[in-house]
Image (cartoon, rainbow, N blue to C red; front, side, top):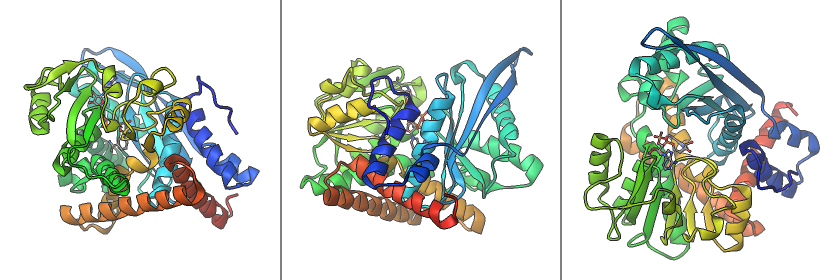
Length: 417
Ligand code: NAD
């Protein structure tokens, strides 16, 4: 068991939640040791040739956490703060996430410590190709499959697929979240945000409420945040505030998400969008709304602001947005949290659909993708909720308990531990 502290690293934090569930399930010591550690970690040096001919050395990571249930699976993020500990934490979250939605993958994650704001498109492309070729000996369509995360997108995946294919032959299933013309799945772009709204709807229904008029604030307006905001508004929620790295906007009557998307496309940020009031970026977390969706960075709700969070429902669209200390503080105050390993699992679920379509060389229409996603996310929510009710624990502990049980079972059946 890890002692609850203020200054836990991201990986210690995820393992804190893991150990809590493992202890409640009386998981044996050896299995605990295997499941709380990572299988393989690599750091690669990437000498990046800049457009002006100079070389800038950056570092990239790939961590494979656990592969008991299938090939390793997880995104790659480009961020100045990416580091090995964070990538380990994100990789382990992937193990628990794929188990909760019951798809046949393990967990992995990648990261490159870089500020993409300082790179041209051609520098970004060289960086991506170099990283892929350096990790190519540990990835593969039945070994480890990458996907987009913060500051990476379908174009990044297209470069990765192409770089891998240069030595191994055409292999679309090596990455998911690709552009549709290259074998990407319809519906993948929206999938993480859509999954968040599906589980939110389930929770709202269980609480005997309706989406209409419930107010929502979304931190982050990238892939996940913008789709979550758009689909929540379509369901009838009143999305009153959204933010990105450059600012936050508010409209008490509800924001017009289509207008915001257009403004963000042109101006590069939601800041100063028409018919909005500007507000302080961090203050969005403390708004008096019914639902708060952190959809940007990790560790944004901590001991220092947890007692100022007013939303009674939090949907963890981002990975690890709430630290363990803040999690306890919020629980004591009766806040309900839909945990990351459930709430944002829609992305990896449709990545799984994309992978199966690539392997079968047969594509699904968007209706089928969305219907299957709906089924998987609703089932996962209901299983987590039922476990929570039966064992009188919160949704995070219930999610970890179910996931740990499935991964431990697979590891035992294989004779791995
Ligand atoms: P993205 O790069 O598309 O968007 C990130 C957004 O966060 C941008 O709008 C950016 O401006 C904003 N942001 C960054 N720093 C901020 C700050 N300090 N304050 C406010 N906003 C800030 O990334 P994404 O793919 O949408 O990922 C967002 C989160 O969701 C991450 O935690 C990621 O791990 C998680 N996630 C993503 C997926 C996926 O399919 N892309 C799946 C599961 C989880």
